[in-house]
Length: 114
Ligand code: 2BA
Image (cartoon, rainbow, N blue to C red):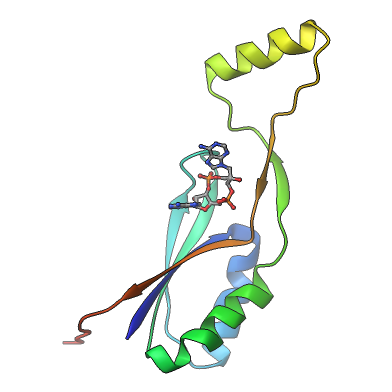
């Protein structure tokens, strides 16, 4: 058995939940926060037999597609440096590209429901 841990951009979370439910997959959703941007995202825990791993990864891929530029993520020091660069007429960018989902696949030794 495998455990898929998928950190998903919030805008894809509802669609992903619906698609997984429709296909009969169980999932647990956790409200999470990205460590860099400190913005909300949704972490899915999806336990599946190894034989269904590829199908579920396919669903995640087709649902959470494309990256998006999001402004922010600067500490106070970084912000000051960027402002100084801007004043000196140097090009600055504070946007980062956020992907649709970051996925980890873990081996599960045992699953028990009591
Ligand atoms: P955040 O940590 O808020 O990161 C948002 C985006 O900021 C990342 O997009 C990446 O493009 C950029 N970024 C992150 N850390 C950075 C750094 N130290 N320097 C420069 N840019 C940085 P994604 O890579 O698509 O990640 C989206 C979200 O997925 C992350 O939100 C985090 O919640 C999760 N994630 C990504 N990689 C992870 C990892 N190795 N372990 C755990 N969670 C991860």
